[in-house]
Image 1 (tube, helix red, strand yellow):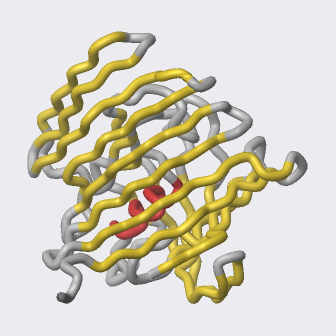
Image 2 (cartoon, helix red, strand yellow):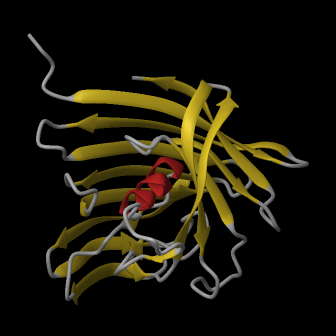
Length: 232
């Protein structure tokens, strides 16, 4: 019988400019016939001694539907929780060893445009909100949220509204460990949106499924993230 869902998966490796490999992410995505897709990702950040498990779903317009995240630090449980998004609300139920039980509900004018639970493969999904039919560039996001204001998602989780802009740079063919890909090149412009200054983030993704092929973050982070394996 024909499979009900289309699937693709991959591995992303993080390499620091001077300290070598600093992390890895394994991800898989299943796409339902109605266009809804679910991302499952496991991330390990070696130098921060943090690991994350994420299950995140978006609708056929790439808007967030729901998400479960679980964090461990130094081999021990840090926090977990469940996010839910609707046309006029965002909610979260979770627990964190630092704050205890967390329950949040936000009434909103519209569904959040995007959500960032902080896997690298999930960062690429923000870019699906960019309107290539518009002459505006960079473009602001509308009602976007994160599960942590830490640049690598190593706190929380909880609902964190954020304002940032997306700049489209152009099309590029690039080669990484997983092969050669035709990509769209974007930038995240997040000046003043996070508690700690965040360097400009450059992203290269496939233009159809928004598979993350490469990310470059300079400044104090000095890290390149590349797709090392890909299937699908």
